[in-house]
Image (cartoon, rainbow, N blue to C red; front, side, top):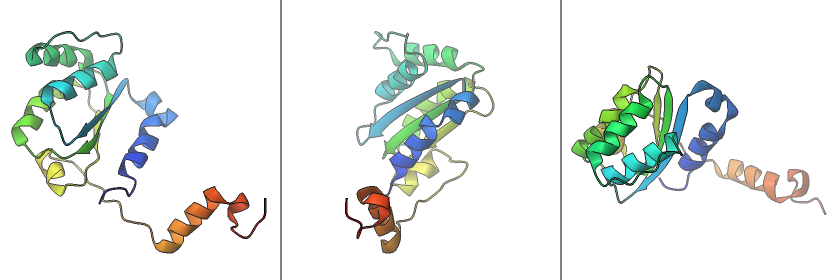
Amino acid sequence: MGGIGKTTLAQLVYKDPRVKEHFDLKAWVSVSDEFDVFRVTKTVLEGVDSSTSVESKNLNLLQVTLQDKLMGKKFLLVFDDVWNENYVDWEILSNPLKSGAQGSTIIVTTCNDGVASIMRAVSTHRLKTLLEEHCWSLFAKHAFHDGNPDARR
């Protein structure tokens, strides 16, 4: 289901200071409906090394460069809002990612169970919607002074 906080949860993990200490490199890619291996590879490369200027239109050259940047490094990649279930696209994208060190992690947010299957996810976590009273409590905490809707400001 969309809008239940998958991206927000992934952002909290990605921005956590402990994550920065644990991984050598990290990158965030907003994938969405339009999956393009070249664009995703380029975005990962720019994310792990912002000094890399990507001028090439050659996917193979991009992937070799990305493989070199990831070689032996422990990385965290987040692929957000993934819809693509094309196995071949994911195989091509994953080739340079195999050069990373053990402990490298890829987080994928998706509304589509098929994506996790295609990507051969080690584990999946399905977020559930909050109960109405929990939604109200969370809203009140942020909207009202001291979380109390009866309090006057």
